[in-house]
Image 1 (cartoon, rainbow, N blue to C red):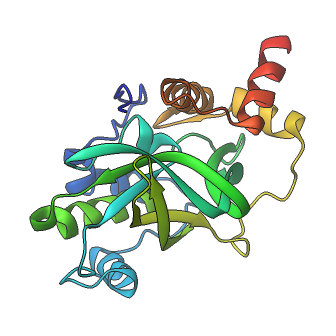
Image 2 (cartoon, rainbow, N blue to C red; image 1 turned 30 degrees about the horizontal axis):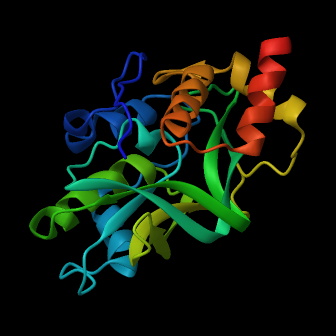
Length: 229
């Protein structure tokens, strides 16, 4: 089961080429007060702690639960409906960059501890897996805000595989502990940055989940709040 692919409407397009050329990191560096951008060497070292250069001895999958559903920016063989346990999808990471600003922060998705999460797993080609994962690290770990993990993942055909997923760091300064729908919806509806509006991110993700026949209770509640706002 696949999802419709989309590109963001911001001034900086989140494409494979732009990420590979370092344009995302360059843009963040140009914004006064932004977090430190990790160098390519730092990103490779962070990746090697999870996945060594020689791989993990089996196929590697990418677990997509947010924007990777509709803009994966990696080359993959197949997309599967998938589920992980021990983590749930949640708008819990504040962003002053990309889809928000220091004056008006946005809110991004992360995998937070507890429960389970349905999404997609992208199977990577073995010969190109590390190359694609490094591109993904330049995108998701550009400022080191997430905790990358290899998680046991159940595919739609009941096979268990290992997938790379980006989980939240509850000790990170941008982790949001306020769980109220009103707070989350208001942040999402009003924030924008160089990647576009936070609401675009929300709506595109919601559309992808709908294509996969996935109902997310938090996102449904936020959507209903925004419709009645």
